[in-house]
Image (cartoon, rainbow, N blue to C red; front, side):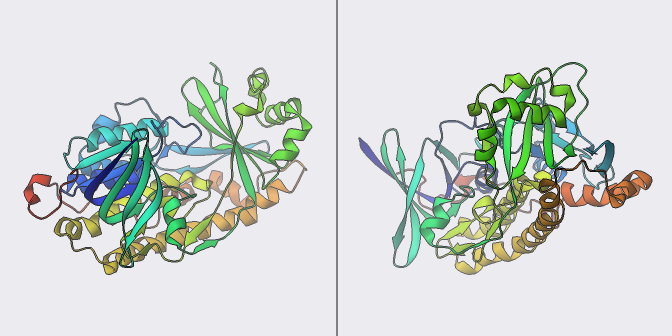
Length: 420
């Protein structure tokens, strides 16, 4: 098999939301960038599908929002949960100071494919699919690139900056030896799909009752369902058998009773092991981690994708100019962490509070539950829904695109060729 060596300004490991968005923004600003994605496509189910108003606002700033909204999607202006026998609307996005006052549900592969299409308008953007990064290249005490395996042989990418955007099981952060602070989680999530039929109720956030929580995401002709379970309880659930599992779902969502038999094999039910962690330092000489590689988020609020994209925007704003001039130092990388660490800490603190004070108690009780009085206040005083609408829809520090569009040919004398 052949071996290949290429050089670029920035090598991004991982083709998820953070990696693709950062690659797009850097290429848009004229910085040569190579994104390595280990899979041959983005078609992996049971990823997060929520595109929040803060992300839609960024697309408006980039001038691609109208094109994005032409793609098949669902728009959610309020979030509703059924707790016991009570249905409560507790999140309202319609008062946000954004172009889009709604949350978009779209399969993540469609979202990523859209971003790649936009990024490919810029000659500085290079995406290598089926390129699995396996090790970092170090010289003189700093990371200078990565080695990856491809169907054609070994690929060596040398770069001024290597970015780890390769998720919660990040190879980059592991090989870099960056310290991880693990906060733990009391639950895991079982993801599955069940057909959607005429007469089904509209989009809700989920249903909570009798020691169980069910997340429901409408996806056209089917529901993407997430059953929240106690941490490590999947083996126990499987031992009770599929019939018991099907009845458990039907009890939570009675309109599923005539179709839970679609789940006739455990292979149709995927386990998401929930992690909440954060790197103490997101960077080292020549390397930076973003998104889940820097901070794995709980699925609470579906904010993981959007936090990762905010990271990417902040990183592009801070690093595009020094990357273009080839003057990126650790002080710049630390600026990215300093910019994004506070909203990450605040978001995780809120998630941990909900995990420990709400979800843990729900999962540990087998008795029927009723909505607590503090949640019923959202029905009595609708203006309260704006608070979680702001926190979920925009986050603690929404970012804005501050770098100008620039053709990579503007600086051919200042940078090494991307391929050569």
